[in-house]
Length: 397
Ligand SMILES: Cc1ncc(COP(=O)(O)O)c(C=O)c1O
Image 1 (spheres, protein in one colour):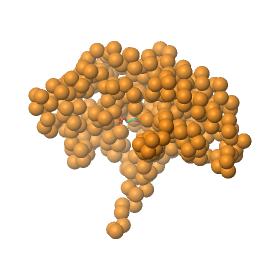
Image 2: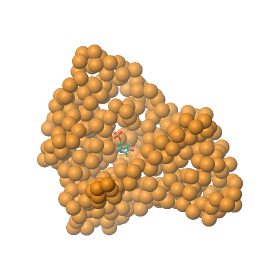
Image 3: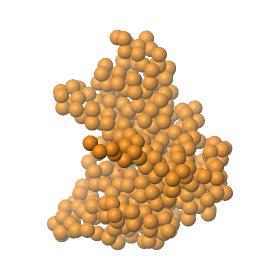
């Protein structure tokens, strides 16, 4: 065995993928496990999108495309930004990649030098810290707990900024917490950023899944920030297209150029067939999208009601996405059948073994007091899951 890259070896595997794989394995062994770990909608990809892909295959649209994306997809993305966000981009300012995950990685690689500070909040999406490690940056994490609805304040952001601050990663609505900042809250953070040279990477992958009429606002819309912001979005969540792997970045040409060069030597273009499907998605009817968002809001209501009936759980109401992220630390220090619970990992292991429910430890998202429960599943499973969660917690003494 040779010694491996120290840098890459230091990267942790994704906790969400690990739990999802374990749940799948237990199910295959015949256990009645309910999974609440998945980070993807449970709906099928809408029919008209699948038909566009089938058409692309039949038309032999199966070769390499332009590295940065097909002209028709780039045009659809530009129109999306204009219509949804009132943002104007030229085609040289868009880079289509194999999922928003790759978009974020490309952009971080393009911007960061070793030692550059990358600011983001906890709870955070699992991949941010590992990506920052890979670009040899330094994570500066601002903590936000349930009492603030998992939102940071402008004062906290200001206090985290140093001369080495290079990037601020912002994600609203958020995975794992579902926190959706209001336009006013985002503008207040933008006012701090506007005074600096920091590049904001705004991860807006859950833009279309917002509840209670909540308005989306991109930091790129804030006066003076358009050219200091890279907006990340993609098709995975809104269109239930996780497996198709299409995401995109929009930002200043000098950043997009370098990110595109990197992509040209790593994965090249996103899948040609998926790009045709993505074009259909962005230019087609929005009925499926609206149906899914409505359904997620109903499930959000169901899960919040159920959680409020369990002693000691603290869960702010998610304003978007499809996750409930709640504090279970009141149960730490308790035990059942000689299994004692001291951490979110202990809690999830116990609930999986004892109650057959798969939740993700909050530790993976930077908050060990919490666990994440996805509500991208049927009402029936949510109700049964809540019952099992209550039963598992009540056994702990
Ligand atoms: C906050 C956030 N950003 C980015 C992504 C990546 O999405 P994809 O690579 O499927 O486009 C995810 C997926 O879980 C996410 O939750």
